[in-house]
Length: 259
Picture (cartoon, rainbow, N blue to C red):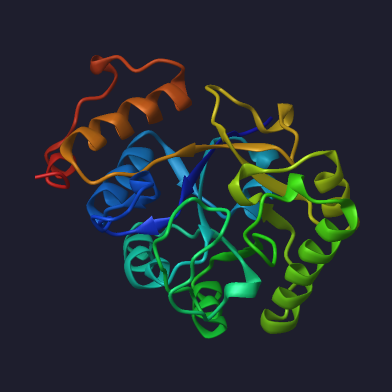
């Protein structure tokens, strides 16, 4: 028996500032609550990525919340919401930027300074059941670099997480979704068993059929009313293969989230 797995890709929790170019990287607390309620309504239980794979033979529907980069708002805004739903998450951190303020990445195409989580905050997330994974030591397109460079950047990140938090990570998120065969080879050498991409989640995608180093994700973000509808239909398509209106009859408690 295997499990149906849905992995969500998230970044920042809050409203995007006016000068944000990639506004889809932000999700409001209300939309995040809506998404968690929807998944729970559809019969999903929430696990970290590592635990989801470990429980893949037990059957059922599993949802994994993943947060890329390691923004400070993940602990300030996301953690209280996830606690309400009893949902842990997996966060992928750029170890070279842990604890830094006003961070901007040259390869991001975005000039939006951000404050990043420090090691103390990451320890707090771990204490609340979150899994701490690697997002490399630098936020770069890994596939653009040779094997020695990839090895150094990936290994340093893994080593630092182990040194600071006492546990070696087994999961990884490719920065910008950039990777190649060399990247996967380096990950395997360094004990990474699971890696997520930016490839959209496919419907009825079974754990057994997946390449664990190329796991797809459902990316969600937004703040306006139509983003709630978009989240609903994209989730229904990813989980059932179709999204008819009659497939879901909102209860009063569900509607109160978006009022």
